[in-house]
Length: 399
Ligand SMILES: *Cc1c(COP(=O)(O)O)cnc(C)c1O
Image (tube, rainbow, N blue to C red; front, top):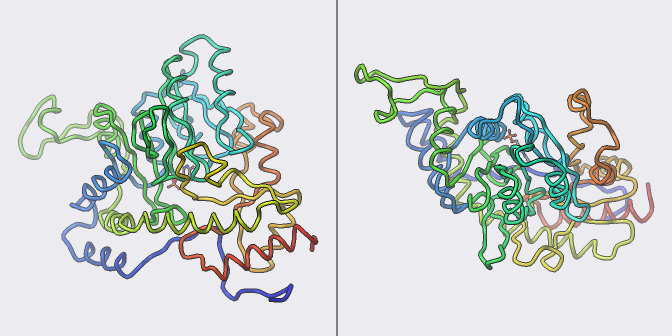
């Protein structure tokens, strides 16, 4: 290929994969009696819970709604201070604000871009017990956070944990007992959340899931998902007859339609296949960029990851000095790489709450250099080689 060659179709950083089977599953639901709140919701929940190894799952309208239900169920209010990472999609922090709580960021570990557990420890140890209410770690890029270490800290300081596992369905880490812990399995976190936005591993358009092993939290999620209304006989304060229901708390309509759950179920049945393909793509990038001057990467290889880690490869991030130059150069060649993420604390909204540039230098340094390359199961070998060629070309020569 020549220097200025283009592949004809644009290559995005992530995209959904819809098969004939997916379409058939949706059509079947469209022809059934239920567009929403039919049998597919519970089926999707049960299958998903099984997939991640959790006891309960609650399907919701999107990942942000999932986060909001979690902060509600955990009783976040104006007095709550909650720790999260600045390198995440802003929804991980916003869910605290929805309940009136205060977001406290902890800087990242530059090797992984995950929340730095030592920094979290320092924050916790510098305050009296009870100062912080909880922590929302993110399995950034698909690299699972060490929830066992966070759980220990959380127990010492009386915190709850919401695992934002949007990037990591199928990912896992291995704990100190040698046990494989799937992301979202609820072993160390109180609650975990997933998103089914088209760029995520499992796509329903809009959609999300909360998983947990805690029955009490599970009941609250169900209640808040649908207006705070229940019809369950054993939960009612009164009972006037078959029509009777009670609104027991101020909830929302965060339900997901049956047809999207049918799509989610169909997608879920191919999740392992997609994950295997993502792993292959990561290995090809790893090999292509290993030792290449001017390209740094987050840890992705089995040798560099914590022992016993199953990375879910949602994102493949490179770090370069001239990130804007590389971004623009790739776009000229129809490659739509993306930046994940602009640090949340530098957003005008959070700046207005008192944060400023310079507060979290590792996150800001990471942001200055990061770029997520195309990573999705249907990326072809030819497309990936083209991406690699263009990245190397730019880094080696500039434009
Ligand atoms: C996608 C995503 C969300 C939000 O999910 P939506 O379904 O888009 O609301 C939250 N956190 C992270 C880390 C995400 O990647």
